[in-house]
Every structure is written in C-alpha cells, then in structure tokens.
Length: 251
Image (cartoon, rainbow, N blue to C red; front, side, top):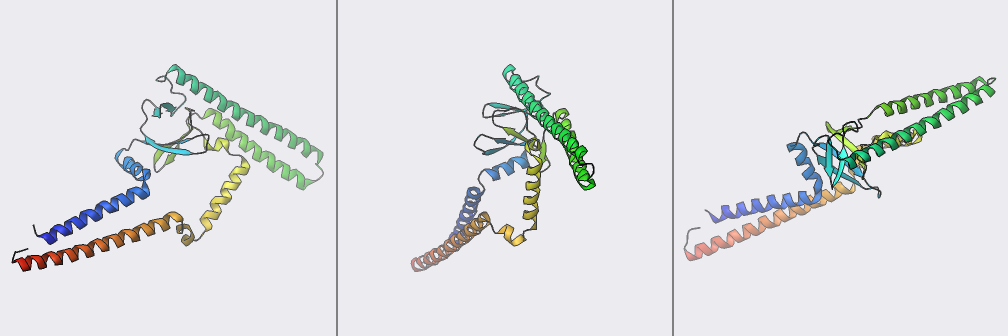
C-alpha cells in the first residue's frame, strides 16, 4: 500500500477515535442512555431522589411490574404486589398508608378553610365586593379538594418522557410518587412564573450557556489538533518521498 494513503488512513482513524473520546467525555452517561433508549424500546425512565436532593436517572425495563435498582425494589403499580416478597409488600403498604394520610390531612385543612371563609362571608354580607371575592376563593378551594379526592382513587402515578413511561421515586420508597402531591397553590404560581420568564427570553440568551461555550472550545481544540496532525503527515510524507528519491526506491 502506498505510504501516503496509509498515513491518510491513520490520520482518519485517529481523528475518528479522538472525536469519539471527546464526545464521550462531554456527554458521559447521557450518550449511553440515548443508545439504550434507541435499542431497548420497552424501557422506562426512572428518577430517584435521595435525602441530599440528588436525582439519579436510570433507563430500565420492568420485570413483573417492578424495577430492581441497587438492591432496592421499586414497583410501577401499588395494586400489583403478588410477585413481591413479604418485606416489599410491607414497604408498599406503609408507603400507600402514608400517602393517604397526607392527602386526607390536606383535604381536612381545605374543609377548615372553606368553613372559615363561609363564616366570614356571612358577616360581610352587606359588602357585595367582599362576598364575591370569598365565593371565588371557596370555589377555588373546592376544585383543589376534588383534585385531592381523585388522587386517593388514582393508584398508577407515571408520567411520560419522550413517548416512554417515566416514574419518580424517593430513595427506599417502592411506590412511584405524584409530583403534584407536593405542590401547593403558591408553588404552582411560582413555577408558572419561572416557565413564562424562560419562554420570554431571546433565543440567543438561551444558547449562551456554559455547556455550549465549553462544547465550542472543545470543537476548536479538535479542529486545531486535526490540522496539526495533517501538517505533520504532509511534512513526513514529503521527507519520505525525498528519502526514497535519493535512495532510488519507488514509493
């Protein structure tokens, strides 16, 4: 094989593997997760939070309606526990009982607020404006109560991410969590405001992040490395041709 062609092949292979290494270093675990999502269609995205507020992301295929992650069992549906051990069944029962207690306590608090607002509204009957405000607040609380009542009936708490099921867990708790269970009305308002502000930002500002800047720098470094390698190959090829010419050998 011609030595120049061989050097070009070496340069191409080196550039390819250098690009793969840089891409793997930048993307890390996420690129492996993307490959798994492409190859394994029946998988689910699993998010587990711990007491330090760190979130671990896994892509798993449920077996017998459960995931096995780091020795812990996480189920997809609390009504399907036949295949679980007695210990896991007890953990599921405790989690479901605590969930129902939290929801029922919130319903009791809403009922107390409604009773209080109705009593105040009776006192201020003479002021029509105040009465309309209290009625609107009572109606809003009534809607919140209906949502909580429905949560007591709803057993399957899964979301969807990129057209695949996604489950949220807290570490050690086998039952999937409903994110909205922990949101108050004020939390919802704050989140709405944050989303609105982020959507109103110019596109240029959104792209000007540290990750994008870092990626641009790495791309420039890779291009410089490729140019340097190409220059060295051309220089070495020229030197080899001169040596072959002086020796009278055919290269």
